[in-house]
Image (tube, chains in turn yellow, brown):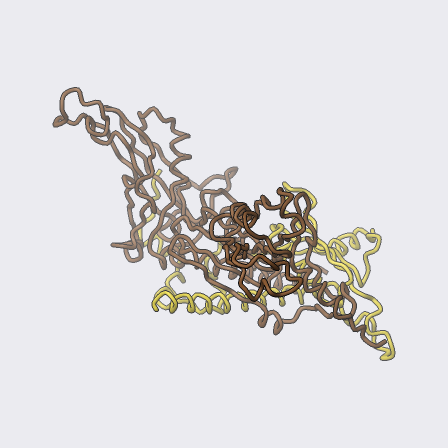
Length: 171
Length: 380
């Protein structure tokens, strides 16, 4: 059955549609924010990370080995794509003692990341609060930030290579 | 505690560890070890500055539909993320709903629909990437409310295929070629008509019209009297949902091969050695007088003979053929550079091949941004 949509109807359904259609969106602004069914955009509005630790705390069952220095994070709708990249960048963090990821079952869209940080960090001499630096949540956040920075550098370098190739081809 | 200063040999050994060793039956040095705490006396923690300094991108060739480039100085986990995103997470438009009004061809309805779904389309860049939004399928249990539509000009592309096979009256008598004897004996992708509505004319007109990227894809074969009458709706989707939405034909990488000739390979052996590799990998040079004079070089008394020299290891397929012959034993070492990824991206046509890579980087970034926001609102 063909759709009954008319231009007018379509306009009414998407009132804020044509805001910036003529000018190209800036690279930094989140793309297509009005595109509510775009899976990439939907991720901004959904809760996709849970700490398994917290969930168990609710049930008054503490996962063995789960404390301030260790936590598991459950990611919904993520797979090896992000899992392995995030694992790598978190392992690059010197506060992190262990980081690993797993996909418990292939037919569930779930990915778990386990992070353990060094607890003796900052103890020596300074008398600093030793759990003040390097909690698993901070390590995860740093990992995400580092991955974002990495993406920016890759884009920058790739565009540089494109330009170089363009001038080489012209010459 | 004073930092441990690794010895010179130790540093050389570590430097060599970015080469994956390839033996006749086994591989060595497979995993990356650039993590803090792995090597005594080395930091290896994440540094954006260092990454910026070491990352190198080389474009080898690039056309609209095909490109090849090297990413040097990146970890496999990240390179693989880009590859996986190109295959499964970059959106493209493909036929999703097919409404069959009539199909008297011998190809069954469901087979025909499946074939139509796989036909790749292209169209105005701005229209497809910015104007066109995602279509959300109604919940199959609830269904679409009566008289309402969730299909609008900004999320649905309407296409139609209406074709009938007839006899060609002008054909010679006894003509056996169906293409000459009949009209429309073959139904091609180019017979699919785009029906713009609403604001679509603005974005998809002239050269920007929605059309199949390969007009000569054979969809069905007909005989006189048979006809196909179909309406189709194309939506945006991603490859993880169905392969028809994948914007790439192939997106793959391989590691740069290395060939190290440790002892001279001369004369007839050199020719045989050259034949162990694809063309252009090994070249034959003549042993110079100077080399032949040098004691202990292995070239003594071989002046003027052929010697094998590595010309371009990138062309090697790492077939390991040279490791099968006893005469080369101990004379050659094969390897691959662990952080040198030679990407090969072949677009199906909707995206430019180079844009696909840039988009994959953007998708990974957006993903991280969304999860960062998630992390701040995590249930506590």
